[in-house]
Length: 386
Image 1 (cartoon, rainbow, N blue to C red):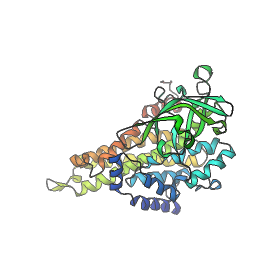
Image 2: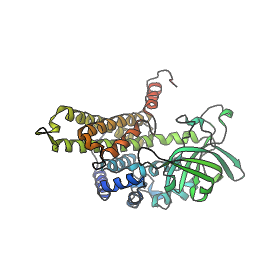
Image 3: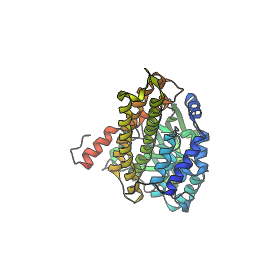
Image 4: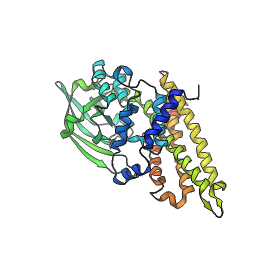
């Protein structure tokens, strides 16, 4: 593997940094204080083409790879921004790209690439099912040329800022299938036509991560919006999980490096008892330790991205990179908070905002315990723990 960025990749990083420089700490503070969606930032990303770089050129996208996409998201977070407000547009379209019909690809992908359509919402999780996706109960019953959907989802983010939603439903009840992953289908819902049939309840969380609980009341979806085969949707979603892991992992790493950059600079300048606090090993060593852990996680992330671009499915690498990135970013967050002391708690320095953001990746988009279970069972061959 070549660990040196190409000239084009260096240029991508620089261009994203320049874009992010237009949205400084004051911008993100304001959005956080108002629990507002960073509409201007997302629009700028879209206009610059960064949200469509994984869409093939044949459909109007950038035609670049997972390495470049990961670089974009890491750079956003390392610059102090929050890519979670837009990242789903990068990977949700992959279900259409990999499993949709040619007609669906030509109908939707060019409009997603141009920004005419936003595919930001992803309806998977349900209150009772949690991580056990096979237990979802949202049903879709075929009625002529339509599916009638009833049920609900939770933690569906960016619903209010999306034109389309990828929705996981049961077309065959759990009790009626031989294999628990069967009977699950994937629908592409046009929210512009369906909003009256969807009840939305916003959920306030500890970070500005606009998310909602949804209720579907006889929601009608054209049968032509079924992605792939009926009953095979679970594997379609799984096929995109490695991409999601790599991309969200890159955001975690960006946050972690941001904490290290902030903490090391502050520790070098802050003088207490006549000396910079960075001279004290109790301050210096945790920051250095977190940096080493971040670099190690980043290497595994790059390996996963290269494997993905080579057409492989790096399940272990993507999941393990997510595990290590979330842990190292959380270590960096705590090291930064310790270095800043009381000032870290204030809104002024931005540490508390990112600190709140850094806690979520330990449990989402998948709990680290489930990652460990996957590694133990599927990689190391130990008995199934759940």
